[in-house]
Length: 253
Image (cartoon, rainbow, N blue to C red; front, side, top):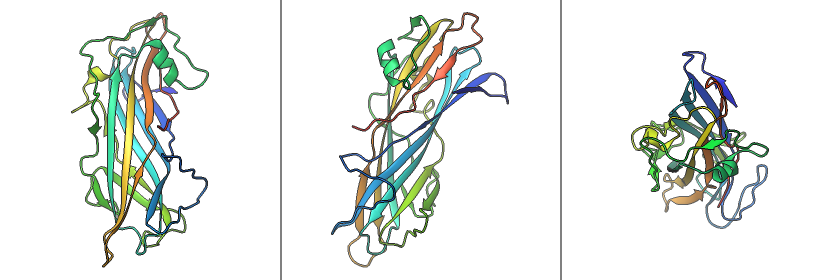
């Protein structure tokens, strides 16, 4: 899953795409919509492209970013959808042991290095949630929110329809700066050593119609918890190889 960053030749970049779905026992398949006597909204899917950068010798994780693509559907909005509010909260856990790292790896993969490093320089964790979306309010064209790169209605759907589907794309959000120090992620991972951290993402999307003359319509979607590992597995004896491996699964709780 890794590829050398040919621009500088000094970083190794890994990209992860994670899938998600609806929470609370609501089964969704295909383009089916939920109809009821009240406005309703539900998750369709969420993909988050996670990018991890390391130095060329697998010693330090230097950057972690996510770029969520959030799918949703709505029904029984008499005048369609006009506004959204989005919350993306992230927590981390540094210093995973071998069992925890293996549980986060894709099926069929396991830690290859003989030594597991659970403590590193300036290690820290963010056990309380950090909201990575600076301005959570936006409208159907995504304007007035720099964290939103695009908002699109589904095929044969308009946001003025009483029912439909849509997608919100966020700009890339950094998780190794500001509230997230580099010590959250593996550092000084030498030859024949593995180290890892867990990243947990919780997403909530409010779908609203504020254009109606009557009382506004509103429905809230709580997405599945997305969980993945930033895991550096460096079994190379020469120090020039090794892989950064991230899981490709999402779990809902």
